Length: 369
Image (cartoon, rainbow, N blue to C red; front, side, top):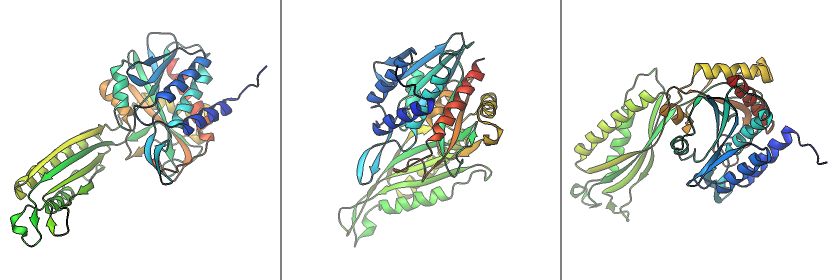
């Protein structure tokens, strides 16, 4: 007879594989195949998609569905001087925790179905929408997510029932003025002056100070090709964030008004487009309460942490935007994660994945009974 592998060992083995073979958004082909092979070993039915990476699995019976989502993509970034795919956001851990929870409860009896959504392309912000378009929310009443948290948010051993992510949106713009000789600035329309105007405009946007909000230039490129040419053209980017979706919309409108004013002030062409909007969290008090009780029951009340407010964003919250009746929350797991999410050399306490799997398993069982 073969050696019995413990839950801890299985989770670590899965994590080591996914960490060793990262794949970026929309290219998670081998990741999808590996998850499918694990599900097949568990005798859990699953569904893949011909035109999209990712997959779903389902256990239990009943009309209503309790769902859990794991994001499966990696980032593309420089790691020790090499540009490559890299799991520095912990999605390899998220997959492993969700598979661990599935392993714990797959032979239990439920009054509802439990659906496991292994979603591609969270980092590019469109993966959740692709899953929604493939009807993964059909009959779903509750949705749970799970994610490791950086050490400044949550220490190892603590688990929160709710992560309140912020909303984010990004603007890309183009300035078209007139180049001029450095000795004759009056003959041109200086794009650098326009960029300074945009920077000052962003600093002069006022929103209720009780709200959390920021807007800042994240890219400015203006080059006339020579040190004695005043550049007339430039490109720029703006990063806008808030904890509330309605505040983000207010900021967008104020920025658009400001850009229109600058266009007229400098008498130049100014074009822009908004990209990759990610909504802020709409946390269900009911779903968070289920997660809270499950944390206490599975690992003890001393491990329960308060909900986290974080400026980071996650496309998990598109699920509630598309289905407002959905009762949803994302569980946060303390892991002594450092130096931080998206750092190319991010590390964390691996035991946190076992804790997360146990909490998630109890949460799904409580929600389905």
